[in-house]
Image (cartoon, rainbow, N blue to C red; front, side):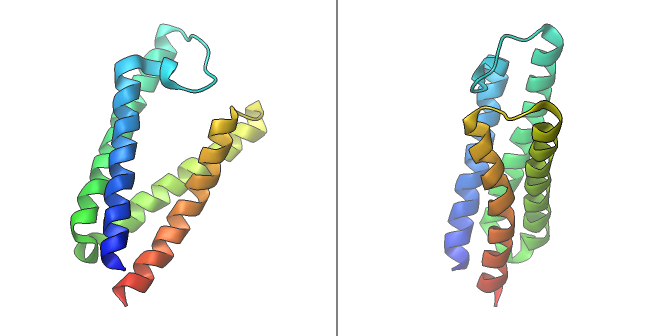
Length: 124
C-alpha cells in the first residue's frame, strides 16, 4: 500500500513540475480559457510557476521515502488543499472559471484528504 502511494506521489509531483515547466516556457498562454495578458500578469504567472515547480519536485522527493518524509508529504498536501480553497474564493469573487479549472478544484480538494487517509492506512 505504501509502495502504491509512493508511485502516486512521484507521478503527482512530476505532473505538477511538468505543468510548471509549461508555464515557464509559454507563460499564461498555457492556461485553458485564458486571454492575452500584459507583462505584469505574464511575470506573475512565470514567477508562481517556479514555486509550483518546487512544490512538484518536493512532492516527488517525498515519494522516495514516505515513511520518514510523511510530515513534509502531509504539509504539501495541505498546501495543495488550500490552493483548492483559493479557487473557491476566486469563484465567489470573480465568477466561475473554465470548466477545466472546475475539475481541478475538485481534485485539489479531494486528493489531499484522500492521500492523508491512504498514508495513514499504509503506515499502520
